[in-house]
Image (cartoon, rainbow, N blue to C red; front, side, top):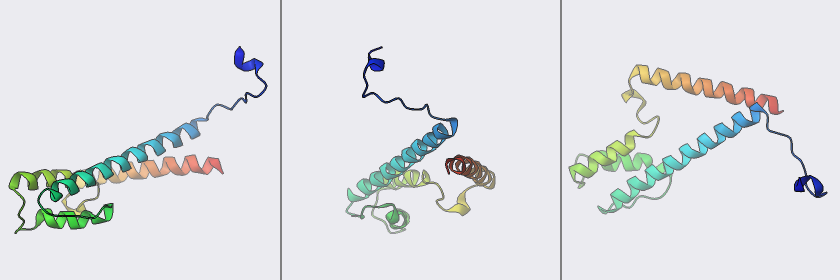
Length: 125
């Protein structure tokens, strides 16, 4: 009741289903970006403990992978296994190593997400 008595209060339209869908996709993407950043930083920290300083950024992933998988690496086996587990959490890492069924399922999921995005964005214009 108090809000209706104030002339400076503005009323807003409720969000449409399409707007809500876009918000869900946006939050999901943001969550994935944060998780990816967290993984890269965890890898960098583990390697730094053993004297390997790797610059920031997702672009350093190949460099991290090369350090971990080097046959003459000075990393203890336990640390190497942990780093490999962290590296395996990245999507699209070594596309050839992903089983065909899983790769096909991921492709179908990406295709579905793209279709939803196009439908959501198409109605906004």
